[in-house]
Amino acid sequence: MLSFNDFVSLWEKKIGKTLEKTLISQKINLSRKSMGDIYDHNSLVEAIKKVDVVISSVGMEQIADQTKIIAAIKEAGNIKRFLPSEFGTDVDHIHPVEPAGTFFRNKSNIRRAIEAEGISYTFVVSYGFAGYMLPSVGDSNAKVPPKEKVKILGDGNCKGVFVEEENIAT
Image (tube, rainbow, N blue to C red):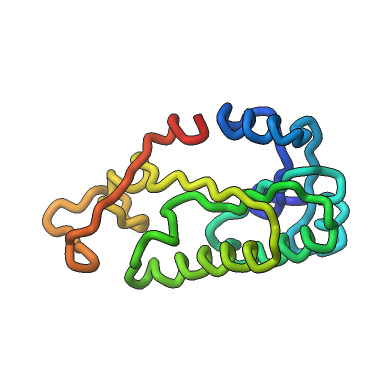
């Protein structure tokens, strides 16, 4: 069967109230959900044909693979709104350095592919999760905060946005 990172989730009722109201006002059905395997085109198309909205919940390692979802959405031809996996920074308003640059370029490429295909979309940007980023000063590999030295990438003059996890999608 499918693991958490291998499926396209197509609506549950537990979504942000603002987004829910927006979708309901557009007469988008929030009562059905379906799942498809991102690596099985036919199952993905069949799952997408059963719903109005596609919400991708793939993990960071699969961000670039959302091109498979885009292709399935185009083939199905019935989707009113696509919400790609977008947790984190708004990639259209940053200038990242490596190693993050490659990851952000993948996210940006997905955005451009969605736009190029003419798919109706919503990018939900949550910015940095305070509980994830701040304890390690942004080093996702660190297990504890640095005690002696912090490596600042770039010129040190960037602004950051951090969100408490409990406030995401509310």
